[in-house]
Length: 204
Image 1 (cartoon, helix red, strand yellow):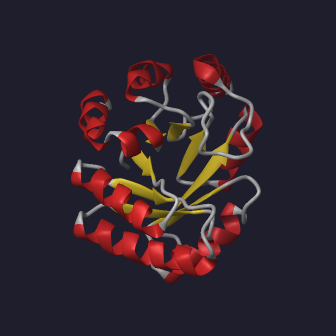
Image 2 (cartoon, helix red, strand yellow):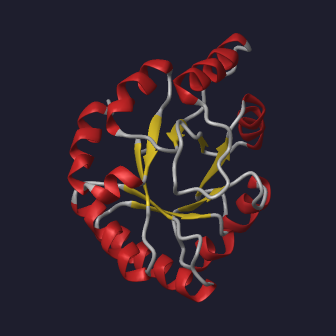
Image 3 (cartoon, helix red, strand yellow):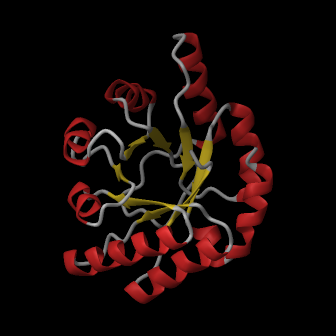
């Protein structure tokens, strides 16, 4: 599973598509299509074009929140928030071979996600981010450290945890030392797509 996820950004479909293409051009191999403000019609069009783009670049295409959209465009999977459809129902709808990721903010969320057998966990936020309207309590590096230590103390195998929320490439080394599997990045890659190379070098 790729260690770098790009979470798409943009206020219009054109902006979204351009940002996704630039990220792919610079070596991103995993795109999560996220456009909260879009109408259903706009979003399905973006998901369709993103799936085609990802196929062209041999990248993974994940749809944020909507299991229905992921199924309709035959995306590689879906990423679900804690308020969204359950992992179990999503698995039933999408089938066993699709990737299902889940958001988490606390140790209890992480344990729930492990129990639900999602394929990876997006744990965050690391720090303040303007891309989310309702921001969960900020974890900081210490928050990740505590959660991973608690899992180790319970002798639970560490799942594939991605740090999310205000993550920049300068954070990667410290996050990996803590035991985080990968990172999900939005702003820094949108603003400077060439930074993907820096992420790839450091994400061992």
